[in-house]
Length: 54
Image (cartoon, rainbow, N blue to C red):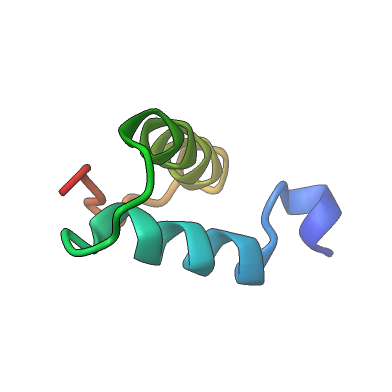
């Protein structure tokens, strides 16, 4: 069902944890890409989690 909804729960929550955690040392460009993925999933499913880049 995740393919139809453009949502993979493991990928979504793992990427969200990287984006919102200020102690994570991942490159900012990668964090922005992850944020784009999160926002795309939210928009497709008419949801908003209020996720911002830390």
